[in-house]
Length: 131
Image (tube, rainbow, N blue to C red):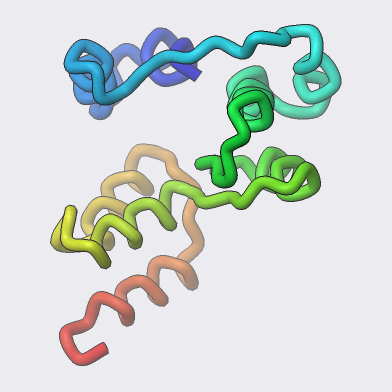
C-alpha cells in the first residue's frame, strides 16, 4: 500500500500528507507476516488490496478501508466489515473532524476518483443545513 500511495504517485496532492503522517508516527507501515498466504488473494486482487485483507486477518481487525469493488467483496466474504474513502469522510464530518465532505469528494473526482453522481447527490442532501 505504501508503494501505491507514495512511489506510484509521487506528485499526487496527498503524497506530502502521507509522508508527514509516516514521519510523525500517526501512520505506520506494517508488514504481512505470511506473504505466502497472500498468493491466492494476489491472483484476483491488486497487491495492496490483498495485503490490507491479509494484514487485517493476521491482526484480528474488524474493519478495513477499501474502495476497490472486488476487494470489498473478498473482505466481506472473509468476515471483515468494509468502509471506503467516502464512508471515512462522512464519519469524519459527523464527529466534527472536517466541516464538509462534498468539496473533498469533488476534488477527489477531479483527480480521477470514481464516484457516482447519485452518491455525491445523497451526500449533498445529507450536508444541507435542514437535514
